[in-house]
Length: 185
Image 1 (tube, rainbow, N blue to C red):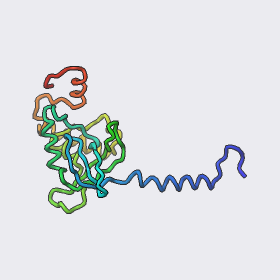
Image 2: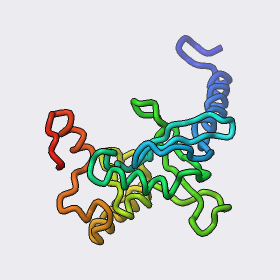
Image 3: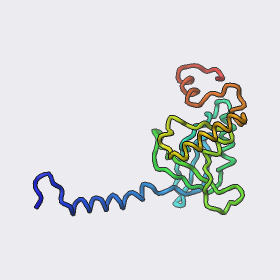
Image 4: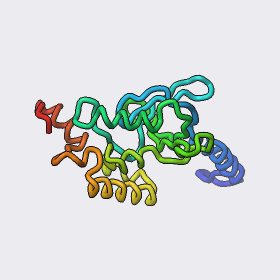
């Protein structure tokens, strides 16, 4: 019998097995159909059990609805995802209880294919979202690099919001509104 403060080997093995069994449950992707677009980076997915899930696209921040390019960003997200079957990878939730994840749709040329195209990356690449660098440590290195490159490309091409001479990032725009500054930029 082990001495005081020593955990028996059998208990350790049992604890590891229980944890291993629970890990896949946390990593399970959400699958369903997009039924609503709230703005340029938030949508609602209806799963196969008819439960709705509010989802915030990971790694991006799109203009707010009443910010310049906000309506167009929401329209771009709707064009890519509304009524589409999606897979959402990621199980973290934000303070608004939205699931945060990478949202994937089927390639445009193959609606019946497995969803594999990153919607957030497409929004950045077309100039309707910023790479949300405040949270880039939560991204894989590959995703982080792709998002950075997509934003640099959209800026260089002056696509979407980058056509504006001084586009204001949404996080600055929200701060300005909180602080009482209501000018366009």
